[in-house]
Length: 454
Image (spheres, one colour):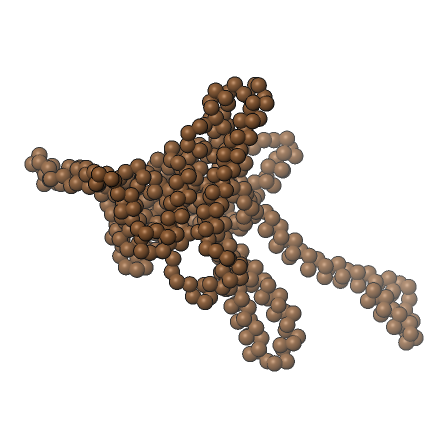
């Protein structure tokens, strides 16, 4: 269109333009137009291609999420946290408020937490083969069991794996998949002596102990106080020895300690299953990706585009106005990051609750007790400290911290949302179980198997 206008103006002013020159001008203009379109299209295609290639389904829940870290970066993170790397990283976190006091493995509280954690770990292979448990699940009449997940717990495929498999498929060759590293048992564990902290948290990614759980003694004290035995605490004694006693064949006097009741162990298992679910679903990897790459990157791109659009207007006011616009973009990007972190955290906490119910059910616990546990954590008479979504103490929100909540229009706390979603998940279990039994009765071939299990 512009080239035709140039030729028309030349004709009006009496400038003679040959047909050959006209074709040359049109050809040049066409090339420039194509080049301009490529400059605008290629970055957009690469950007959205990277986004689509980095999308994946969260295991067990099926939520679409974005992890934009490369496989090499994930492998590097896992290698840094493997073995003693996890303990070193967690000690750096705990040492912010001073040197932490760790409970040794010989302490009965550590053994209590460790045995409960190992019991939950043993159910992870079941999550990888739930489809084989259909008959047992549908015919169960005791504790509620979850239906097989639509997205079983499997190693997360790499983004480049699809392209490689497609290329090999064109050559009619089958190759074994090369999955991401996964967080697997045994998980690392630390129990910290801190009576004023009634919480726990998980941290890490990768195998060989690259992920683990930290439990504070305040939570254990709260659990023991909330469910006291009716006849008083039962005491157990474990002989303790030292180098002196072993040298002379004697032993020190046994140290009595309370024996946790099944109710107390159930509460501990619920919190540990929640933290374990974060590790199973690689939530910390997702948080690292969104918090350091995705949200800041998108905010920077949007800020640069706005600065470019406003530059013709701000250039007349000197560099100070332009710098102020850039600073405003940084502030807006920071608030956008907080909104993104809040949304991501909310989805992750709900997912951890749902997956933890599966872990509890397969480990022999009643998943319905998790509903009462989280309801009591909101307004617990046994604890003087309020707790947030992951069981940790919730700090007072400042104006900037509360902005994401105001933007999202939250009408009630996230704890109530989590409890409602957990209740809905348990109702879904029973609904699908009844539907499976109804289908089995309609199919004589399957009816004998399921009804026999029932």
